[in-house]
Length: 135
Image 1: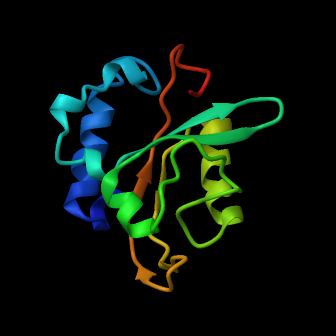
Image 2: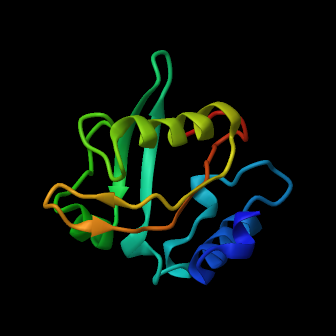
């Protein structure tokens, strides 16, 4: 279980998102109140999922992520831009989330475009309007 060994901040945001599920498999974006998680916002990434064909677009990218990336991913499609080891690895995580409504934990170190070494623990959790379709 990744929660046992990950950074306490990952545990904290997981617990917050999990508490927003109520009786559903996943929370809705409407359940998330940015005022409840202000310390997490600089590190939040939200991704819109388009189906048939599967395409992923970065909706919101926090300021700390932009700083670590060296550029803003907001509005870009995954594949054209990404935050991670390579586009295929990042896409695999999001495909898992989109297809299975599953939670993904990633802690893969990588070198970002400026040549800086980055180690970032990430938790990726789906949101859904109807508990079935990903946003």
